[in-house]
Length: 123
Image (cartoon, rainbow, N blue to C red; front, side, top):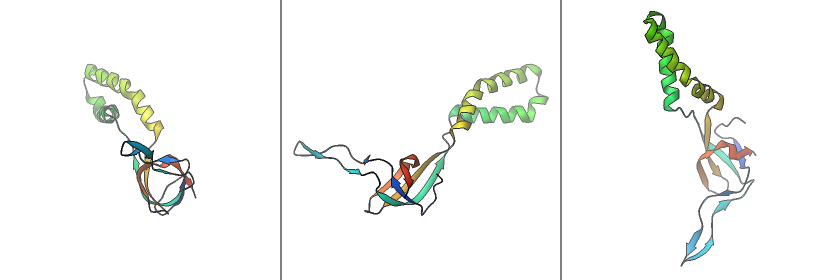
């Protein structure tokens, strides 16, 4: 599902918002939103969680592609080995896709911000 601002959504499952609430040492409950609570998407954020290894792969791969042919053979070989060692992390990063979070204003007035988009379905 593609999320856009203004999209109507609903919670796919009950969502606990607080830990247990205590009054005078007695647990009186907790706050949650019920599944199927509807609201409107106010903001969508796509974030690709780049690790240090992914950034290093991109940097070294670019260096190899741009200047590899001009490098001394031993230096190029070392660079190729380093790029190869980082490639599995790069491939995993490419396959995972971006993490999508949303800010949703529910019809009951609650706002859930920075929530994983996977917990919502179309309304």
